Length: 97
Image (cartoon, rainbow, N blue to C red; front, side):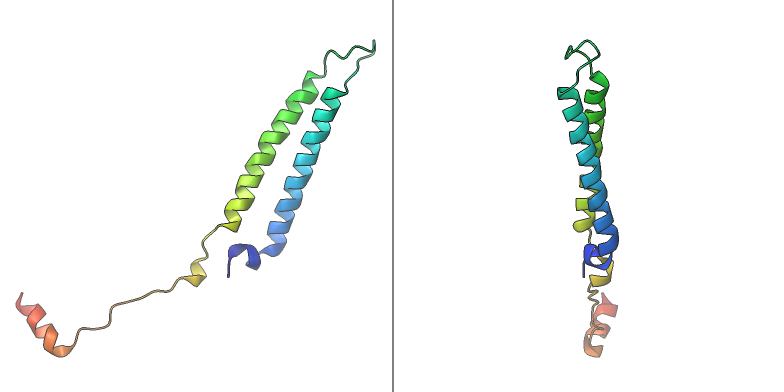
């Protein structure tokens, strides 16, 4: 069983957070594109662009973390294979070497 299926609630909350951060980034980019100052000029709005870039980078970082959780190796599924004891007639030959 993978980590994602064991902790589905946490993974879904992480994905929801990713969607929210991405939506804020898109909204800030829209604000940058549609920005008009008091005089009606389209100049400015640099803060909206900066916030959009920061949110995009943050969304990529969150996405990397969420998908690394999906790919996490579950240590509970490990199968430990150990060597069987050597037969008695072979143990005496190993002691001679």
